[in-house]
Image 1: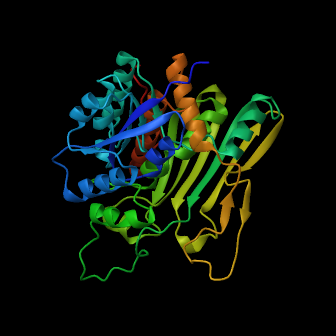
Image 2: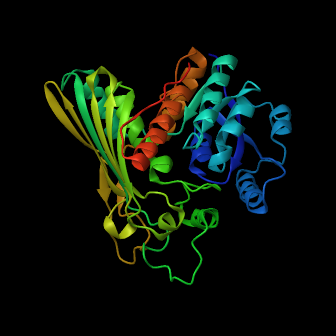
Length: 371
């Protein structure tokens, strides 16, 4: 019997979410063989890359193109600063590699369009890392597909992360300078709250919006056509100082007659006993669903428990493995991934339109991809 094909993977920068390459490495058909980045990156970038390479006992090469050429790789994993996501993905795609990319896809819709076009031209597969394979979300998808609630016509998502982002709003003394975004994000790497790592400040919609918008897309099959949004800098001083939201609400007009709403925020660790309030409501012609994203879970409490440890443990959670199974299946059958380049681009377009709506107070039409 022929052994299933194994894929050699290059990690093109690993300065943000290490859980992406770690998730890939845990799949038995994927092997991390090299970490690579551009030589002109700052020292802190090289230090993080080198530390990850040392942990996996693989080389760190300060030349992306040379690493791709010399290590016979088929897959690139991108988890760099946000501004570099599409650049690194494009360079890999143009050399025939399939790409797994950290979120957000980009803070530039034009860059997203270039990735979509390159994937089409080179016939490569793209997977945006996402949470669509969490057990509760998958169960909801199965129930909808089985017709249990009829055709969905409305969906609402609460997506509140109970994470801090530095000092609370209003705590910076007037004599102190405003907080520097990139310096704050570099320091936030310690506790994993550096989702907006990059030079340009990002609010919660750009950092986390891909997750709930991907849920809505998967469960309804509908695309967003118009959006109306309101945002606020309500919780964290770094958001106030950099004029980016930590709280937002969206109303979505979608095709197929579907209406959507989304509330999103980084609400602070003290606001919730778990990772946050993440819940989906789907209304269909014959019934409705309420989905708690974290279920199934069990709460664990014991003496001398570390204060920072999550008390709630998720169970039956194989979404890393399922994401890789989906990605490899797309490669081997010439199919689509659960969140491909075009779908990821459309989510970025929705977020960009929502931020425009929040600025001007009007409903905004979401730009459609030329593809």
